[in-house]
Image 1 (tube, helix red, strand yellow):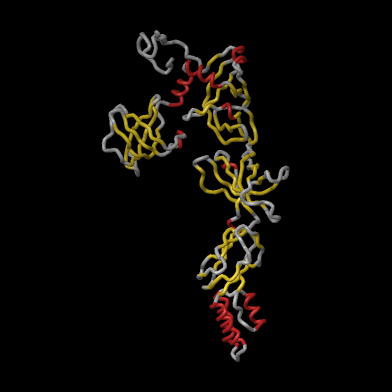
Image 2: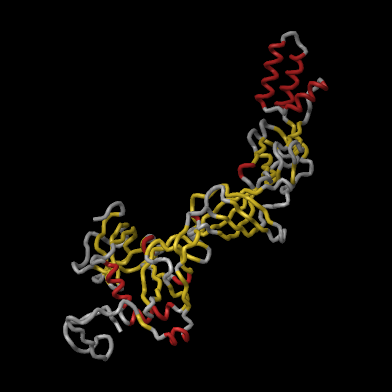
Length: 435
């Protein structure tokens, strides 16, 4: 029942009350797979699938949510101290066009500067008038207010602040009667075209997604209608909670039908990487340490093989090494064969062959939580090679015994390897270096 454990003399198994099975020098090697009667294969519902050469041009399906385009954002601020006279009935969420009035304000500094300019404009020295005109620009006086004053030959008492861009009012801080200081925000306007569709792409597919990748989108609000766009930016950080990367797709919204907050179903046509060997994704057994498939040989033997995986191609997985085109792999029922292979020692021999005589070394950082004679407990960071998240677990001491120089609460970097079902510490050092 424990095929990877051997003894140098006959006797009873320490695991069960059974006699040990003898094996003599010169005996043929045990088979590298398991043989199952064809009728049993059929009764178990085992389904085979060929290793195929397919195009790695992936079609990625994901969902996204519309947001405002932050590149089309305009902030309207008070240029000088003043008071809000009128708000023109505006409220957050209103759609405004370029030049639409937002608020009327009283700005004494503007009124005084315009009156001074008009007085100098009618004087004999055009140089002073020109200097006064430039001063109006430096104070931020709107050009339309200056032109109106020149036409009416009088300084206005109030000034109308207008929208610099078209879009939606996402903030409106100026209310009638409110005092404004220089630099105080009056309104924020978010442009409505183009808008961004923020798509959460699985990190396994992000390598095939590039800026400029075409996207087809369908929104529940417009059934049967397709919208087109292109990937604008791939954000630099991944979401650790759901293991996705956010991608921005820019969409034209000149008709204003698309509204931020809407959700959409997205199909990305990822770039082609050529042809590659692929198998159905359900054919791969992921153990945490390796990826295996069960191959059906022509002689009726089912053999586990380790493979190196590439990217996901729809419902299939790319195989970088370990298989050849035309081989038959088990796509359904492989766990029953895997159990039989484990009992007969096939998996143990596979693991021993892959080990190559020396265990693979890993390292990470962590905090010492407990120390005893058998081992040390760390609260450690993720170990990418083993697909481990951050967690707290115990590691055993090696045959040389405990490693000194550490205490509970220390931040360390430690190295470890696997021995059987246990993980053994072989070095511990400061968080910056390992000894």
